[in-house]
Length: 264
Image (cartoon, rainbow, N blue to C red):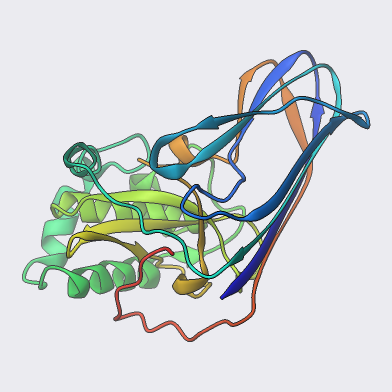
């Protein structure tokens, strides 16, 4: 499979700042890629920092001005699957900031009691979340977690993913959030999905069903959106001026939601 992705981000930096981007395809692939960052048209240095689960962060120290980042990458074939350590399987059972599995434990037990473990449980959780939430861009806040999402009954991809992660953790299934490029997604943007550890492997759970799971490309992986945001401002200030994301694949296969799919 051939997949091509890009991200173009423009920011107005209001003072000396340090910005950390998570926009590059993870180390599970060896993409043909370019990354360019300028401030007021002049190139600025970029440091690549390795993060957990193959995530590649790019740190940009810069002065006041108009910053533009351009990332383009092409991937042929599939990448290596991610693995899990014993510590990972403990970490991704714990409640986290946006995936409050402790608060949702009574709901999870009541709704999914008796569901067969493994693929049937992933399908059940994905279907339950997908039918109870309405996908409405702009309907949620960046600080919303799974509990608030279920109360509001609406959200965007990260809200769907946080809810799936929280419910699965409450049911004893290690689960985490993954930021991805998603060929076929409409409207196009960065996308967020859940990933659950069943049958000794990580498998995708995407209750939005907005893009074929087999085409997704991993960017960043963590407990929730706090670990996977495309931009973190660690010093200074910056305002988003514009952003454009693209992701295409030479084929968009049908997605059998009852089948386990791993990010490759």
